[in-house]
Length: 275
Ligand code: HPA
Image 1 (cartoon, rainbow, N blue to C red):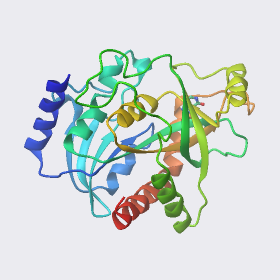
Image 2 (cartoon, rainbow, N blue to C red):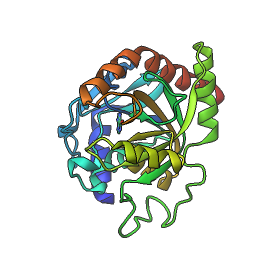
Image 3 (cartoon, rainbow, N blue to C red):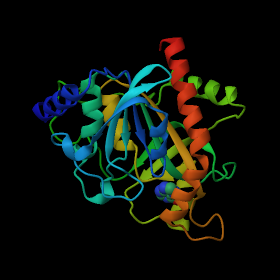
């Protein structure tokens, strides 16, 4: 695994001189953010040694290097999900490659269903913490000690400093950002109304099928992590509606302008505050 990471990073370094400080993973329907990257170098996942291709609509499968608000960044336009049948090791491989390239900060984004009734479709919500209900963990198996410790602390899996920065960034754009706990299930079915009632009782504010593998791997690597959910729909049973991926993508498209502004503003503040 360690050798594979080095090979993937070596290939990327052979294509570009950009030394990224911040990594971003774009969730379902949020890929259009890449238009904000300056001087982009685009590498399809298929060209990078050991990277797996994306199979889900709305996940383009490209790694892009460039600058955002003057900060060198690497952006994953599309991610792998556990429900696609990929082993966890493949799902977190791109996160580990970004760390091998030298990122210190990882910004994870996703589309999510709103459980907390103060949320509305179209809201962006900062992840304060998570509940892992995927039934798996990417660190299962022999620990790769070159990457991190056997038992990583998860007390502050989503750093307070980064949350404060994105709160400030949102305010400077004239909008207060909400905060919440993200629960991740395996999928690919959306949840049942009974599952959503259970998730509410155990303290979840929003639900999705991604992000936690990368967040866990990133904490293992010692990266600073920030999570932003785009509430694309209210979760099952809250409104008299059925759920579908087209509606998720449609709502993500409506929010993309504000989402992109928030990321750019947040990254500008990261640069200013030197965190
Ligand atoms: N549930 C799970 N994942 C999701 C949802 C949802 O309601 N909306 C977008 N991704």
